[in-house]
Length: 121
Image (cartoon, rainbow, N blue to C red; front, side, top):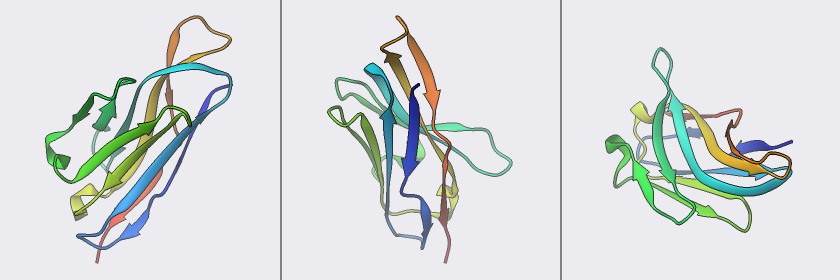
């Protein structure tokens, strides 16, 4: 049983910072790409950033220069450091990962339960 558990969301003022964490647990053989998506009320879920197992990263234009994605492969954990937060960053943030479990021979895509980030004064 593989699962992703996020933490670190909350309420922050504009210009502030938050750090999200997502830990993968269970019978994990290997993890390929890990990433963060977000969904604001009334909007579609969008990719915020992802990171390959080798460290290559990809960001949506609206967060470039403000957000940094990183991962600790030994801990099966991905992080999202969010600086200079804006009200338009308000959304539920979801962790996503391509994981090969001990039981299955192929990679499957998994989602976390989501964590709320609210940027407001």
